[in-house]
Image 1 (tube, rainbow, N blue to C red):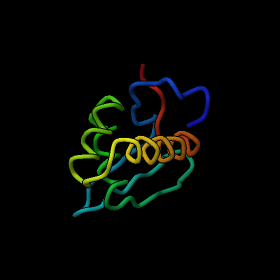
Image 2 (cartoon, helix red, strand yellow; image 1 turned 120 degrees about the horizontal axis):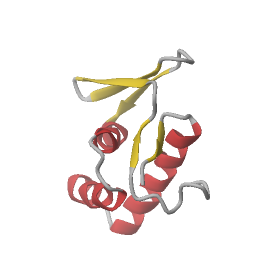
Image 3 (cartoon, rainbow, N blue to C red; image 1 turned 135 degrees about the vertical axis):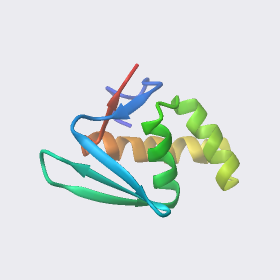
Image 4 (cartoon, one colour; image 1 turned 90 degrees about the vertical axis):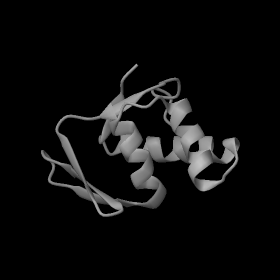
Length: 95
């Protein structure tokens, strides 16, 4: 995660990003840039919890339960994915 977001406990979907769950995938679209992304599996799972304003610590716990991974792995993977979403300007910190 980049340094400006490393301590952020919550993230939210950025404006003007829209998204929709389609079957077991999440389709995310940035209205201004026209970019779209298809998220599957754990990425879709994480996105939905960010969109529900779940705290980062809670999302880590949910990943551990749903995917049977240890907390250290879940934290590292979540931090990496959040950094990608922040860099793509799809989410922002919502402290």
